[in-house]
Amino acid sequence: PALIFRLGVYSGSNFVLPPRTAHLEGADLAAMRLIILPLGWTVLVDVVAWLAIHLGVSWLFTQFSDKSFNPEGPVFRIRSWEKISFYEKGCRIKLWKGRLPDAAAWFAGGFPKRSLHSRNTSYLDRFVRETCRGEATHWTTASFSLLFFLWNPLWVGFMMVGYGVVFNLPCILTQRYNRIRLTLLLKKNDRGG
Image (cartoon, rainbow, N blue to C red; front, side, top):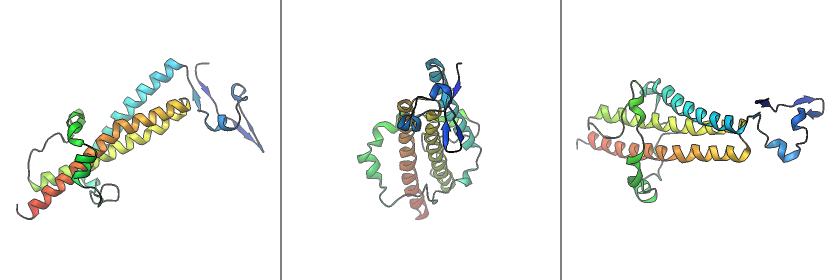
């Protein structure tokens, strides 16, 4: 059959494997995927799964109020070591951040973050919260890469985790960098500057 589930049955002290997997032992058993698909179907499922994850998670996070994202919360707060110089010199963020997509226009109610449209305090506060929404979206999207171990060989599962990191980490770094810059603008507004 095109789809095989490799789920064994625990019987007393023995783990009984389905007939096609009975030859696997030890480390092979621990690394075994649960769903086996032909190569073409595996590639198709990978592509469709990533598309669904990217769009689904992005849409889901647009459904939350911007008040749901607290920039002072444990995930989003700016750490003492996070300085603009870390992002500009260490990550060289100015060289590549302009090339990242801004998917705000894809969803109703999306907040465009490509450029600053006002220095008004309420706008900047909303922008800061939107950087938290963007960061949460990308952390969540990257974490879904672990699902790919269910139907891919182990080495492909690790490639999918790599993809999740490589394609989401730049966006996470950009959200954090922008949050620092926006926070500095808000402090300047508070001082009347």
